[in-house]
Length: 83
Image 1: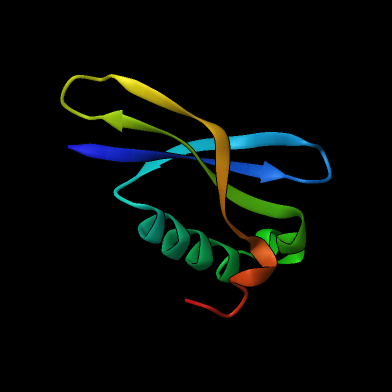
Image 2 (image 1 turned 90 degrees about the vertical axis):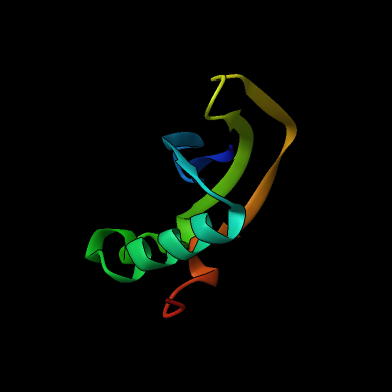
């Protein structure tokens, strides 16, 4: 099975602060929206955050394919109150 590798980018620090996996970009966006809307800290800095599809992983073989360029899925301010 294939999963997407997601990176959380903070625009202010210009760094990726978290790497995770999701079944699809849609699932990653839904989970990100939930996190932003249910965390005072993330909601406060939502405009500074964005999630990117940075690669894919075959969960059976462990083979990772890196995307270049990465694909921005959405920014934090796009998902405020969008659960």
